Image (cartoon, rainbow, N blue to C red; front, top):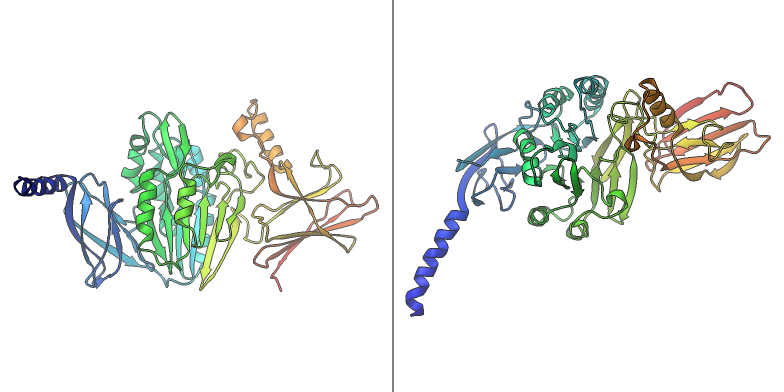
Length: 478
């Protein structure tokens, strides 16, 4: 009896498989060059191109895209505003990718912006003005391969502005890869899949990857959206499964950048499946890049894992030049040469040497007699030291305070329109502030800041003058 039933079961199983999956074919080329070893996925399944650049594999019948992990030194056409690394899967059995050659793969640079977040035509015009021009100048000054990352909240609940973003971001002259944020979802549908549908139609897959040098950037959607601005942060089981599959194709010595909207441990807790993702990445060198909070905060997660929560390029939602932690609006630039990775925070309309802001005494209520310096990209490898009348006094005291510069800006803005400052725009205390407590007879205070990469910044305050005289210069570390 079993012998008669078994063939029927096998036929039935084959029929089920044919309903759930289908075999597709394609190629990956750059001009006439056929690219071997390029990873191809549908978001669940994986394969790689053969020596002749061709591939074939079974994709899920409900797959939305077939897309590639773009190899280093190449990029899909980005003239639309988003690199063409994906093709819609519906109704297709063949997928042919044509890539463009970029500059040399090393050194490579990543320009990461967070939270453009325009809500009005006026706000978008501001973003398309000096910030885009500043990004363009920075991109053109860098040698080697340069790509951009927009770390979410590209719009502010106005999905139609994504088209204007794409039309303007190409002005930078580099491919810019997008990350979905909570404000890049539609507010009226229900459920994470439906609220992000319009984003995917305009920007492509929400979870994908591309190569730079020997390394890989993995873009993840860590916003779990419900409806009408109600959302949580985390990685769904499907995302975790896709990352697990992807890592099997990534060499163990590759550095990994995880680009996402919300930072690790958002709001002091952990995001859903965070521990699972970190366990998958265990033993690898990982840099997390995020936005969402409109503040600068660098965190050492573990020996090999570092988190960069990057302040907003819009400042305080286009009301001020500074963010709620006192960081100037700006973006972060990462450079990898050989095995050496470095980075800096670049304020809009300032040079890269603008790494701190000195606040004279009398401006901070908690420390009325102290000289304060705000060092927005600070991490534990930086040095913040001071001198009194030429005598070295040691490290400055780290203090968790709100920025008086931002307080003045936001109060001035809302005072001008006769409204109170909303709770979500109120100043946010931060740990990247440092205090020097001069003696009553001190005449001069000098603050010296040194980054983890040896860059130095110095300012001197003449305490005896009614007019503060600031002397600022930058020098390379010895």
